[in-house]
Image (cartoon, rainbow, N blue to C red; front, side, top):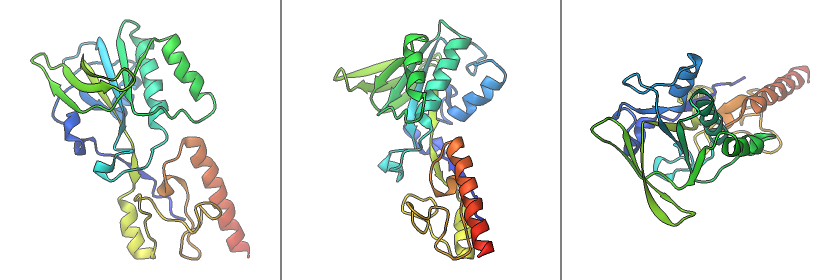
Length: 236
């Protein structure tokens, strides 16, 4: 059974967003660590007054050879934006998105709650560049495609919603086991519609996010299906 999972997109590859360059540019994983301590702070230890989230960092982006959607980024951004507003009601929060893909049950409700209860601002437009001013605030150059005009924002904290990629550890397994990767970098299956838990090699089964981006419920369901497929193979 192959369950190599996924790798998180390395935000440093999008140099124009400033991760690893500007001290107040972080990833969604970094922010989640802050939530564990029930406190979100800038590099200088102060509470942010303005926070922006950038969707699709490393997903749906031909420039980094990732055309796929990572499924969980939109809902995670909305969840984290709402959490910041719960912690700091006076903080201004902006979500910069391409298209909101709130595909699962109750996720659309979460999106509406973020707007109606927490007053999160949603701006449709891809971030073109991030810079830094003398106060170490992050200056964003973007656009509002719905209003049809360029936009400049200054925020205290910029959060990059990094997507999923195929696991690099999978590549060495491919060579050893005779498996292959699909064009999107995830593990290729025998048939993505009818045999998504079977590899191209007889007797080797696959499960989880190694075959593509999945939510936690999808991963659990896929693991059960793979176990059932393996059981049937051993009993045949």
